[in-house]
Image 1 (cartoon, one colour):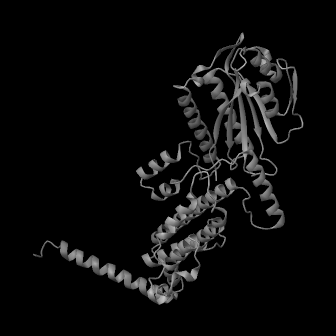
Image 2: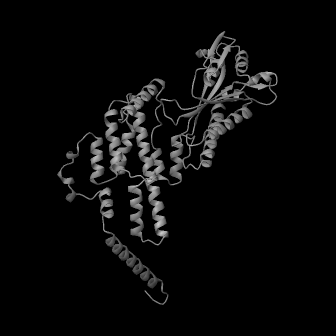
Length: 428
């Protein structure tokens, strides 16, 4: 699933950083910093797919030389705490081609040049060989001064100001979302990205009456792992894959992130199944099938198959498995103070009044299946959603057709009664 990420960072001398070192590392080249008298050599760095420089028109020829460009940017700053460069970090959709990723990154860089008059140095990176293979991303390094015919001139204060900086960045975030969504649409992908906060997305979903999306968006933002935890989790995933076993997070932050991602995956599957059921029901009704037959076909399509036609487990059993796996991982206090993913899953499963929902909630609370007591036996309780579905699916075809015919006869009788009520010749 496509995900959105855009972050803006500054290269500050006060933090011991320089524009020359930042540029050399991101593009994998050797740059000698004249101000520091140091050589930054990252020619052995791997995973760099493409690099290019964009500048405004009518600038000096040296602007196309990366080493000269960033040495000039360093020379234009005289204060020891100066900000010498700004970095825009972009996540690129894995669902589109490498050519499309390059195109939308270039379009974003061109907008930076046009909007702020700065020099832009772009490096597109492939996913880390030991990490998530969907993690295509780009590093866009920009100067903090305008580049004109005479060299670097005035500072881009519009991005530095507290009043205008946030507005400018938010507009660029919106542009980046738009560029990605256009590329996803061209590629025939259904998924879209959204640069807005979860709260704003949830409010928009509620306004348009999309309760399922609003429920899915009612969560905390995903916790950032950080370099150290991310490295540990990558190694744990690689080891689990080599040993042919299920991946289990090894850090506290990793457990929180893993549980949240499982919960979102469960929501996405429920949405897919709902869409399949609606689509199948509509097709069957248009083909002349009765409500029972169309409903039966919709239920079979939603409960037995995914979009690619593979057999799948019952959705409630999968939710219960998610809860069971995350319980032991999430009992320790988390940075947020609570396990949000488990709480949301518990609320969802409590909506089912049958034993399946009760068992899952009991399991979530740390009880065994037998703690439910004897009152919840099959004879003394209301059948669950899953049991009702199975009863319908297991009925003989002849019985369903008879019920369908009876249903149609009742509909015809109701229509006759309505015709009589509408007859102007009768008095009441």
